[in-house]
Image (tube, rainbow, N blue to C red; front, side):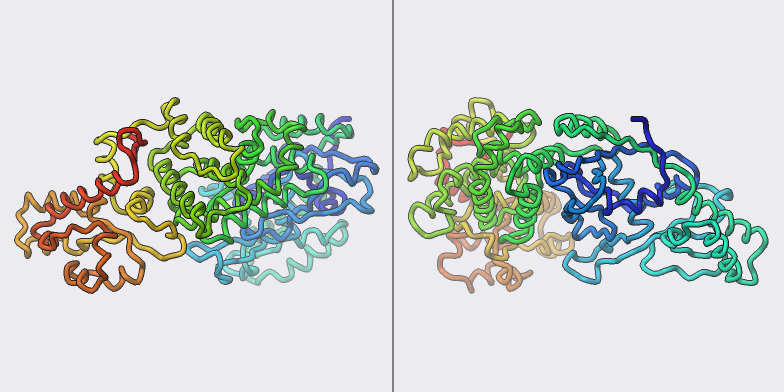
Length: 594
């Protein structure tokens, strides 16, 4: 069948009536400026590419998950609502063209709600609903294109209809759908011309008529929509067509396609909603805020299902999808328990440098479904501590950065060896040994420790490095700050000069002030109490165990500012001793990769 022409109005009026979206489509991702560019192209007579539809036979309407096009789009809730095909005649799914059709629907019948800059997501006043307007007095023939988005016509998204006047006449673009006949349109144009201010020039009146007529023709007259309708009912053929049709433009992510395949193959469960729901829960509803995505969930499914860990389409075949489907409840529980566990360590979206580093932990919890390691039994506390230490050092060493399939296979193999023992501890040492064979983990040396000590304030790794110095696991349940033991305020030129610090010594002071040796983790209220106070004075208000917990040298005379260099040297000795208690430096992994 050849491509068929149609008008914008005809196709838009069929959206969510006859035309719907298949689960294999990604969500709407266009920005307002892209919608404006599309409408500008229509009025300028530019082609807007072709569209690909798939018409389902009535007996197949209930076989596929279908979704509605979004007309009232919001960045806060971008998910397409589910639909059903009951009573729909010639149910047609859009395989290629969702972004453009949704943009036309928003511009003509809907709105676009976006978040104001610098406003919090949970602030209701941060969200602004805008509709599309056209300035009928802007002459597209005069002046240069809008340099920012490359348009000539005066389109604008606005919260309220802008006030006309001073050479502007704002028209709600969607009103053009009211005029489905030439008579209605002509009558409207005449009435609108009567509303133009008396100061309107003949040239402006002509621009007004031309713009309005051009908009009407682009929506109702010109057959600018060119579409091909596929009638074959074979899913594999349609999927292949879909992949090829989406090779250009805004590419589908692998997770979009794989999630779509899962959705279509899982029976009795809406996989799309399951996985989206899990992602949102992980990111927003646990102890800390996280930043996981669909790719992480899909990758974890492969590893925990004992399948090939490579994130390839071929690994999501029917047999593997069925395996994942059967294991999904347990996988979902393990993922949530694992993320909740590491959140309790204080590791979240700000400090988790590699999501893949969590997957071995999730596999272990999948093997031990009756614990989340948040309890107080010897087993729970011992393994929570082992996992925190192993994860922290893995992140500091970038063990799972880049292409980490080999590392995940090695870690899984080490975990599988303990699968028969329900009481087996997390095999951190075995995992490290297996990873070391492929160079992911090297043996520690003095140089690696020096790299650790050189980590400085404010880096993404700093919290991870500092947390190793403490026994407690539950950083995620406390508000903690990275505190300078000697306050930063002391390290100004004026303060150091007043303290009699020589100029060459000042240079060394500035090199040390932000190093690990001058940092500690304090509860937020403690840090506020300490503020810029003299540390030795503030220390006298602490309990007997404070110095030991925070590795403060016993010689309190070192807390005098003029002995800052000696303080750093002594505290770094204590840090090395602390690390010695955690790792056997003859065989342990390095704290930071060289």
